[in-house]
Amino acid sequence: MAAKYPTGEPDPAPFKVHVMTRAGRVMRARSEPVRAFSTKDEAVRFAGRQLGGHYAVYHKHRKIWPVP
Image (tube, rainbow, N blue to C red):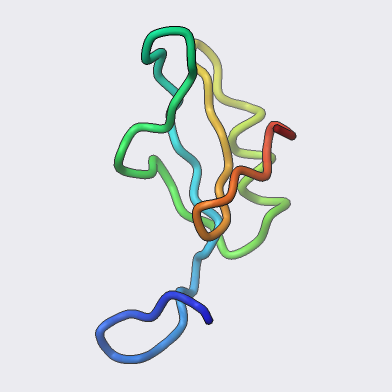
């Protein structure tokens, strides 16, 4: 079942780009996404262009880029 907004509509931008931070030996996503996109291609393209940081794309709490 898709995550719903309070209005009952599905999320219009389900692909979220998160900044990754080092937590011990593991890289983890920060709590809030940097940007949200409606398509996987846009999200991956944005995350791939970012310099000076580690970024990951998530879709409904599942990491999809870079490939785990």
